[in-house]
Structures are given as C-alpha cells and as structure tokens.
Length: 348
Image (cartoon, rainbow, N blue to C red; front, side):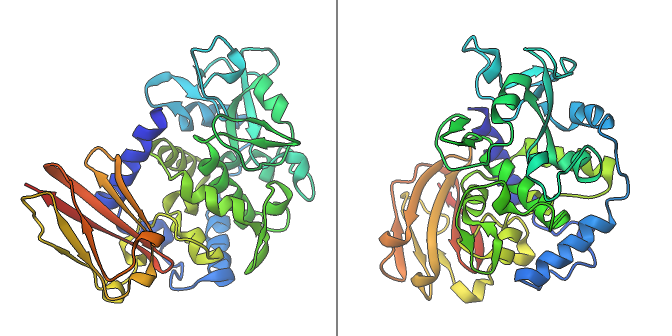
C-alpha cells in the first residue's frame, strides 16, 4: 500500500526535521492540557481563518490539496482503495478534472463531518465550505456513506452495519478532521454525533474511537501537504495534523505520535540509556529508571518498517535487551502516557 510509504516519510520527517513547533502556534500556551489547551487552539484556528472560501471555490482547492503524490494529474479519493479491481466506486485515484458529482465515474466534495449531523446542519457556507472538512470522493461511494456515522472496522472502507468504516488507510485522516471540526465549531460539530464510540472522561463530547484512530493511522506526507495547501488558502491549520500528540494532551489516553521535541517526555523523567551504541554485534540494551512508564517500544529500520514492537506486558524490568539487529540505522520510539521519546541506534 502506498500509505506505508507516506507513513514512513512522515515518521522520519517527525524524527529528523519536524522537531520544532511551527511559528503558526506562537502565542498559544502549549504548556496547558485538557480543555484549556483545546480553548487555546480553538482561538488560534478561528482567528487565523481569515479567508472564508465559497463552496464553489472548494473544487479548486481540492484539486491542489488532495493531489495524488504519484500522479499530479489525479486526486486521491477518500474511502477508495483500489484502481485495479474493475470497480469505479472503489477507485483510490482519479483525474482531478473528473469532478462534478452527478455521474458515475466522477468525484464530488465529501463532507467528512456530514452536513446533516451538525447541530445545526453545516450547510454549504462557513463550516459547510471549510476545506479542512471536505475531500474528493467517488460520487457513488459518497452516496453510499451518506450521513452514516463512523464506526470501528478493519481493512477497506465501506458499510459497517448501520455505520461506515473509512478504511485502514483513511481512519487517521478522518479522526484528525473530526477533531479539527470539533475544536473549530465546538457546539455544532460534536464528535459523538458523527462517530460511534465511548465518551472520554475529560470531555463527554469526544469518543475514544477517534483517539485510537489517531494513533493507529499516523499522519503521512500527503496529509501534511494537504494541511499546508489549505493553510495557504484559508489562513488556518489543522493542529492535529501538525502534531497528533495534541489530542493526547487534550483528551488523554495512550500517547499519539509527538512530532514536536518541545512537547516530548523529558529525558530525565524516563532516564533512557542505550548501550552499546553504536553496536557491532546487533545487540543493544535499553535501560530506564521506571519501566512502568512505558506503553510500547517500536523499533524502525531506516526504511520506516517496524522490525520489533515490544508491548508493556513484555517489559518486566528496567533493562531490556534488543538483539538480532542487522547492519544499519534504526530508530527506537518509546511511547508513554507522558509523551514520546525517539532515539537512534547504529549497528555496524
């Protein structure tokens, strides 16, 4: 799946070059958590939303924001998953000018937060024409989704009982869009009205399903580019694409990927040591002051493939051995409820 490539790219952007908080967030008090942080972000993305585009102008925006990275003549279609199964409805990529939405084989503007599920209805202006919430979709696939709520599932997108599963490739994108819409249009776009899940304790309007999807399907290069294009058009950004960990800081739960070093877990909290590093025999040891802080340890090779995933249940002491590493560069990503810490391992 091409998604894997995007995820790999996004991971290493986060680790190697996307470590600083963007200037866009100057003035936002990122030391806050919970509802105060949500309110800070709401103020930022509302006051910077200086260009209210029309529903007609959205067509032009999507032809730039949702370009297929492998074919600039096409856009990617949300919920799509195959261009080779002989079924146009499930197309993943389509000519960007095949828009209109009235005929099979065309694409139209899908409201991720369905218009009719807003309180009140989102309409086709204001929240109804916010490009962060609109994505290209096959006309028939869009019609099948209708205003079905998002719900858990696996594999490709489609009907899930009375609800709708967006697909493994798209579930994180959908979660971050719904989070944006909730923060931007709080009373009108409550997550519980568009997604099926359990309310979280700190905010009964948020559902745990979206927080899970935000973790399971990380941000990719395509999604970041989309955020940049819409920012250059509307003036505001989707904070949860810039850093998925903001959702953790607001609503709690297992830590999502943290792409800003300033918000990472303080190293003195975990006191991580990796030795020997570099190593010559493919064996390294991780040492920490408190292994109970750790939720999961992921080891990625330079291509971004997860070569080892060590869950909390398998970490029973403050020293952990990692072996059978081939020559190369690896990244160890340690996720805790306090944040994410990433370090490099070199095997010679």
